[in-house]
Length: 464
Image 1 (tube, helix red, strand yellow):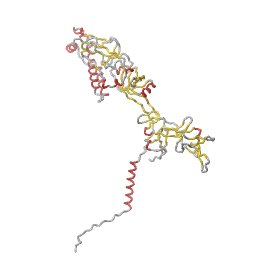
Image 2 (image 1 turned 120 degrees about the vertical axis):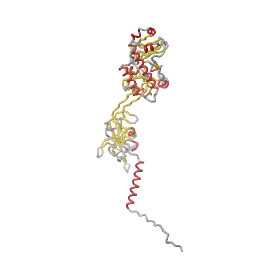
Image 3 (image 1 turned 90 degrees about the horizontal axis):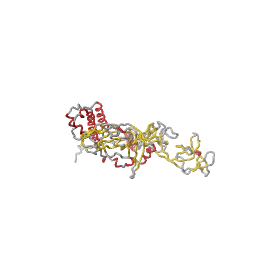
Image 4 (image 1 turned 180 degrees about the vertical axis):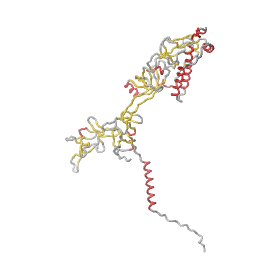
C-alpha cells in the first residue's frame, strides 16, 4: 500500500474581494478612460484679443541704375590713382596718372619722398570699411570676400598715392616726371574704379537674366596695373538721381504704382528713403519696378546689387491669429422686417407658422444680428430656414427667406459658449490679421476668442 504521508498538496487561497479593491479598480479605470479621452479630444484654447500692428515688409535684391560714364585712358603704362573711390571730383581735379616707364614706383621707394604712413582719418576709413564688411558678411556669399579684398587693396594704394602726391615737388625735379602723364576730371561726379557692363542700363532694357548674380562679372580697376591706350581707367557717376530696379509680380507692381512713392529701407546701413515708383513689363511678361531717389547715391556708388526692404503697410487695430478666423453663412433680410419683442425686448422677426388646423399665425422669434448694411441685416440661421415667411411689423406684407451671405469672423467665448463675431480685416500676413476695433457687431480689446476656430461649432459650450 502506497505511503501518502510525504505528499504535500499546495493550498490555494481564495480571492478575497473587498470594497477597497473595488473602489481602487473603479478609480483606476476612470483615470485611464479620462486620459485616453483627453488625448483624443480636440482642446479648445482661448486667446485674449489685444491691440497691435503688422508691418508689411518685402525684401528684394535690386539693381542700381545710375548715370555712369566710363573714362578710357589715352595713354599706355602703369596707372596710379589719386582720387579716392566714392569721392566727388570737380572739373580739373587730378584723378590718376599714367607712368609710361614703370620707374615711378622704384623712384618712390628709393628716393626721399618721406614716410608714406596713413593719417588717423585714413585709418578710420579703413576700419569703417572692415567693420561694415564684417557686419554684413554672409558665409553663403563667399565671393564677397574677393570684392572686399579688392576694395581694401585699392583703398590702401589710393591713400598711399594720395600721400605721395604731397611730395610732388621732389618728383618734379627728376627726369622721370616727363614720362608721367597726369589726367584730370573733365566732368564733376562720383569716382569708382570698377566696370561690369551694366553701365547705361535702363528700366526698359531689363530682363530676368540681369538679376542672376552667378553670371555677374565685375572688373576691378587696380592701382599700379599695366594698361593700354583705350582701356577703361575709372567710372564717373554724374547725376545724384538714381534708381533701384526690382522684379515683382503684376499685383505688387499695381499696388506700388497706386502709392506713387514708397518708403525703402537699405539693409546695408538701415537708412530709409522715399522712392518714386515706375514700372515696366518686357516681352517675356516679366514685370519690373524702379524706385527713383534724389539722394544717397554716393553711399551706394560702388554697389550694383543692393538689398532693400519695402515698408508698405503699418496697420494698427486688434491683432488676432489667422487660425481664429472662420467664414459663416447667414440669412439676409430687409431691415424693416426686424423688430424688438418678447419679454427681454431683444431683436427678432415675426415668423409665420401654422397651427394644427392649418391656420396661419405669427410667432416672435429672437434672432441675433451679426452685421448690417444700409438696408439689410445678417441674421442667425439657427432658428430660421430657407422658405420661411416673416411678416413686416404692423403690416400684412410677407418676405420669403432665401437670400444668404457669408461673413468673416471669430468665435467669442466671453459668455462661455462659441458666439460668432464678425470682423473687418485691415491687413493680414501668414500668421496674424489686424481687424477694426470697437465695431458694432465685432470685437473689443481683451475679448476672449477661440484660438483655433476648427475645434468648435457655433454656439458650443466651452468647458474650462
